[in-house]
Length: 105
Image 1 (tube, one colour):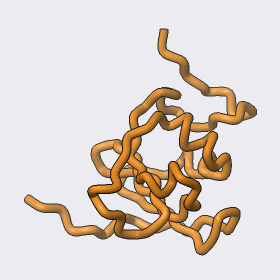
Image 2 (cartoon, one colour; image 1 turned 180 degrees about the vertical axis):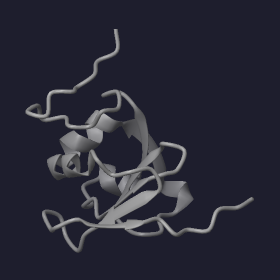
Image 3 (cartoon, rainbow, N blue to C red; image 1 turned 90 degrees about the vertical axis):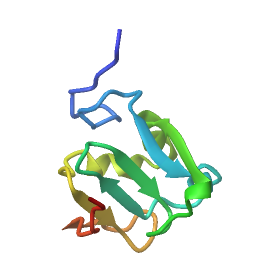
Image 4 (cartoon, rainbow, N blue to C red; image 1 turned 90 degrees about the horizontal axis):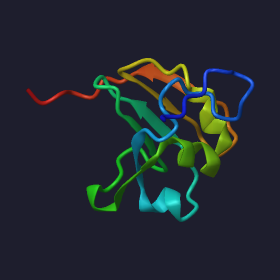
């Protein structure tokens, strides 16, 4: 049975499945702070330590693993599709904007 968390008092705040596959980088898994997050138009999530990560460093982990690495990522649970969030340092205040990255057609 899939585990969902809808109780906002829990540590895991996202509406998505706890085991949802998300994109990150080896740098994040090695301890680099998560400073950039993207909730793509297609529903995918990305969590990175720099704005333009190297594709060779890409890793896929469960969303719950991201929230365990950095519990402050739970603050992003309401990030709409097609939006991004960033901050200057771990623990800093998240800034939000519509993701204006050009899509290849």
